[in-house]
Length: 100
Image (cartoon, rainbow, N blue to C red):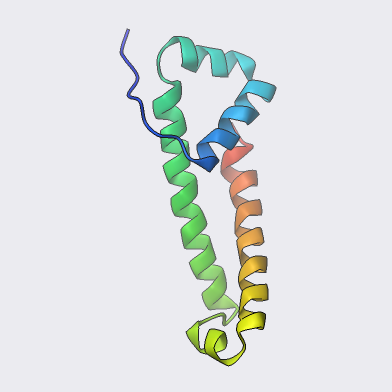
């Protein structure tokens, strides 16, 4: 039996862990008993973070949310960035976190 590395698991990995525990208990316990849960969650966490960062960047570019807007109208920039962050989170939840 291999020993799972003790990676630090971020918010995305924690959310996926909760999802597995509640909806896919057999998979969760198989990963846990085979010492693969931590490395699996670490990979999910990294993948989700990278995808989230990329989505935020792409959505901001496509919607014209840039440094110029931030200087010109900071409140509008904050509103738009919050909307973009929410859109990106929704995609990550649907495609990575609540998916097995």
